[in-house]
Length: 61
Image 1 (cartoon, rainbow, N blue to C red):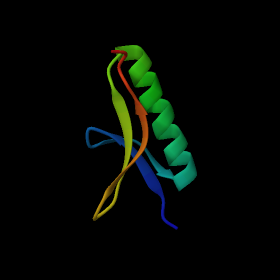
Image 2: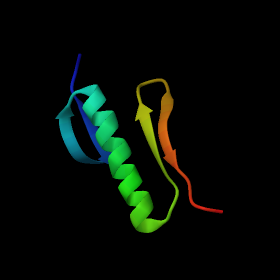
Image 3: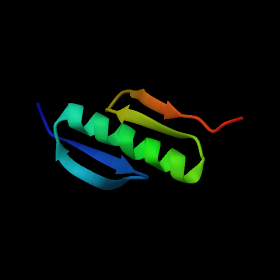
């Protein structure tokens, strides 16, 4: 299995991670961004043919 990166807006924040660690770190970064900015933030897994949402932190309505 390959190594994974956590990216924001195309910029690698962290790289060379195992998949479970990358998912956990991406969720943590998204949650922190949501708390800091009060904006909606989501975590998505992108591969060649699809996008899978792994987490979502929604703005209070």
